[in-house]
Amino acid sequence: MGDRKISETLLEFAAPVLSLFEGEPSPARIRPAFIVAITVWNAVILDESEKGTNFVEDARARLGTGQELEIFDALVTRKRMDFASDRRLIGDFEVHKKGGEFRLRAVAHQAPARC
Image (cartoon, rainbow, N blue to C red):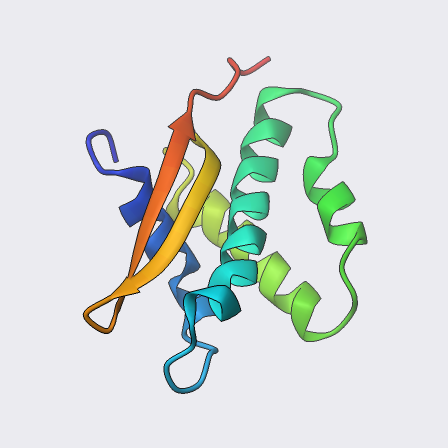
């Protein structure tokens, strides 16, 4: 994943969640989906970096039930299985639409060393 922009990686990672939106949602409407995706992404990395932490479970406990938990759990599995080698944390982000396509700008940070 080396030279790939974190924004491109995040768009791919969040794609299953984004596909749940019908029609052409506005950037403001899909922003919460990116917040959940980034929360999962960072929580998985931090749990792997800092032994004895429960970032994933803490974030999961703040959710409701049903579909929210299913989406969250699917993203956790997706990060661990398909994106495990990318250990960049994701910070600030902006989402907007240009020419009918979503554009994303995201800031990557180095994860702490694994314990």
